[in-house]
Image (cartoon, rainbow, N blue to C red; front, side, top):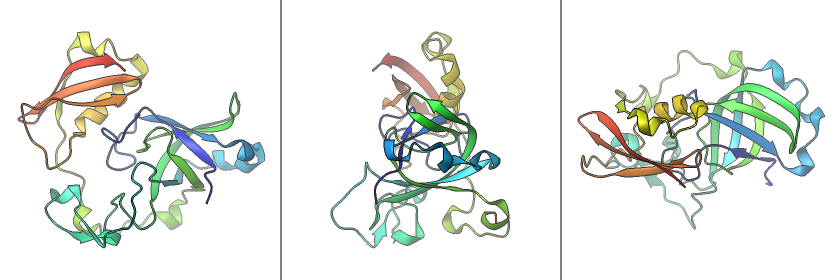
Length: 223
């Protein structure tokens, strides 16, 4: 399969990307189509849907071979489950699925038609293989059971963001960054209160520590 589009997001690398789509609604991204798919008619009627399914490639996680079991971070990385019982990126076919909110459609950008979405959990440049509308009557199942991931992760971190450092973040990115930090970007099996973590976001390097449920931003650097 050939990509029909690529995502433009605020994450240059995997670290910091929310673990699921929709956890941080303030995140904004754009779906930019490949030249052969820059056909406005291909998007006719899409504005009538509030949400879309993005089918994409785990382009940052390609491996030779596969394992029938994986260690889900949700379980602390200490318990093995079947790969098909998880959303691990390490799969026989590196395909991801994300439900995002469609914010607007622009048919005449410098790169042709584009879709602007929120809540995406994709690294910048991720190849998009297909786009399908989210259909509530078929896609929403109120009685669904979520297995080991039946409940949302417990708690959110309190974020301490010194005003001087916050001022270095573009105003339109501050809410989204705060939401990403509150979700705890660290691997779930790491809890070293003295360690400084860092990740790229919107052209910045964000560094922080976590202690006793409080995430303290320590530096904001230009990449």
